[in-house]
Length: 222
Image (cartoon, rainbow, N blue to C red; front, side):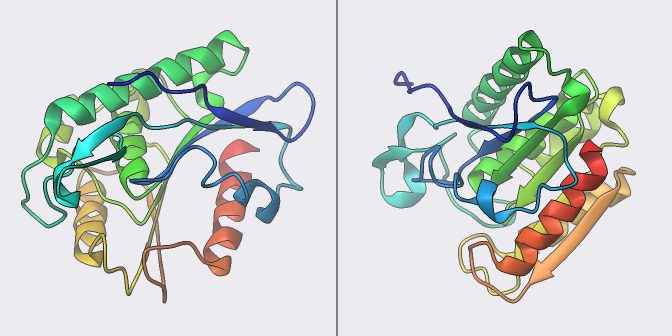
């Protein structure tokens, strides 16, 4: 993988006591979700650090081999499609490094939310469920659970009750709603507490969703 620039960071106040590591979707970069910091109602929350990393450049099979920012290769987006296991696991290691970086700056894993949109949400969820120390939560937007068949054997005991915010658009034409519903069902079957939301939207984020995200963050970080 090519070297990538350092993450974009925003602190909502001095000496942040919690961090949100937010991964962008395929083809975007760390600036993509920067505007959401101002759109969220963070009034009830203590000072936060938002960390928006950049995915490395790589060819993406699903996009005819075009080189673009991607956390891993996507062969296809459909139930049962083959997955880039090595790429997904490498992406998770990069997120683990970011969690360790926050801990070195004084934010314990229990005060870290892993968040992401689309492909970034897949990496956030994959990593959060396997991280050895308890996290604050996983915020998963318009996404799905990658390498789902490996979760039962690899799940972290520390995060068996991890709060999970799972949201999807009913008109999503990129990541089918079916994939998100399968993710929800699998997580619920394994006992994870999933907060499930759908919105009348395509592969994007809407105002009602941002409001719900703010409420959820207030519950898991206060």
